[in-house]
Image 1 (spheres, rainbow, N blue to C red):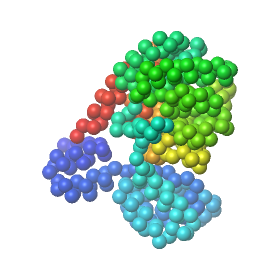
Image 2: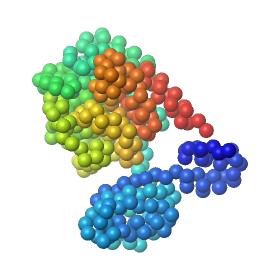
Image 3: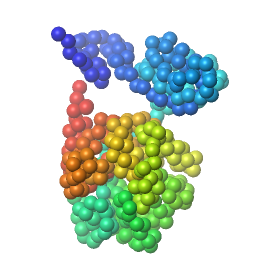
Image 4: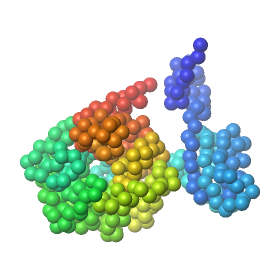
Length: 398
């Protein structure tokens, strides 16, 4: 008789077997392989790294043509344990000046120790991630794709916010312009009026709440920050308005960087453009945008990454991003999954309208938990909080 043991349960099984604690520490890590892809490595370095990985009993996959250096660069996929990667770094130390090996070492060191996960808010408070954080959606627009999320009057807005906070929302995201596919832009003055009025009321009534403004216009973000917003949520990752990243840096305001092609008006056409590898393309893009932000003066603790479900991706692309979400984690920046009630959920489940996509949304929240993401953005706080907390309890069980 045999029993299959999941990799993440090996330490538990070793303790159950009464293995010496030192043995548990040594052996448990060997049971968990953590593949990591490193991009654009010089081929001589790739060949050296492959030989060193093989000598450690691990593996390194290179592109065809690497062995004879017939191409100058290659991606490499390391397949090993954290302990093996530590040994690899030791072996490469004497070769750090050769063929760009030092840059590979920096990437591997960041992978092994990406730093603490925390978001530093504009007022100095810190949002930590010992549990998944839930962002509740408050749309002060008349045309949001999900009618139940619209809250136009102050009384209705405050009642909805209070309900979300009581149900377990950690953040509230306020949007004054719809970003649904095909949506027309709102006049700047109107968007500013909508979000400023809402955020002023929310800050006055709920002084401790964490408030995010959903906008890709720098002047709207500025007005929102002046009214008490803590975070900028930019669906264009700072490309829609060249003033956005300098504004965030000058105000030391954390910013959510989302992947999107085109604009809300044109993204349906943009989704027809083929991705080479949607998970890799989106991850690479967001890390590049994060680097731009850091060069402008923002820290990793002021950046949050969002793959942009539903924004210029077809149905398979959205599903692939959910399946590969773990690829975006582990960079020292929190990851947000925002797929609540989106169209691809309805398509998967038989052309369901937005009003009937709750269960599909909860499945995305479960996906985010298993992928190791840090936040979800949802319309239905109570239901998503419950499924998340239950899954966290299961995963934490020893």
